[in-house]
Image (cartoon, rainbow, N blue to C red; front, side, top):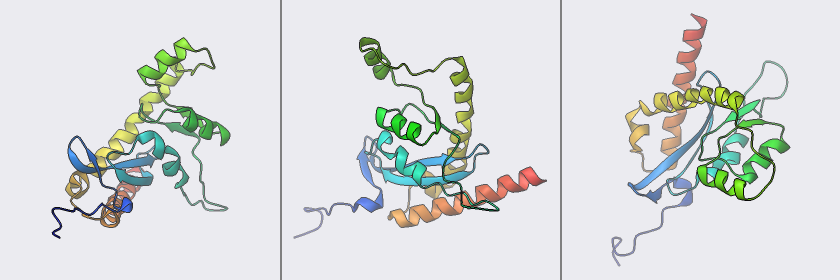
Length: 179
């Protein structure tokens, strides 16, 4: 049998999934307050963002001068793709403060059913303005054409390209802040 009649399924670790634009992938990223990538996970484009929040945060590993490496952030700023009861409970359990706006459908559902309201007042909105650092970090990564267009066939090569770009972002950021 020929391959075009019976296409092989893509291995799950290749991070390729079908979306409106065809076979593509997503990068879920955690960065620090200076826009330096701390951890990332590559998934197929058809994987929901909400399911990947804990996996991405669990990969944080920041070495310190003395003692164990730091594994938990003080606060998480995430976009509307990441809110869920499960994620909020996971963050509360680890005493990590969260600034995650709710989606419109969740707000409408919450109005119908009473419960503990999510505080997204003026203080949270001011904190959420800091999320532009994450978007700028993505922009720095996507300046690399190979990362922006996912020209690598395997997730291993793609992860290596992201690691190289992330390393250069760290070096540039440190050079700018020490100069």
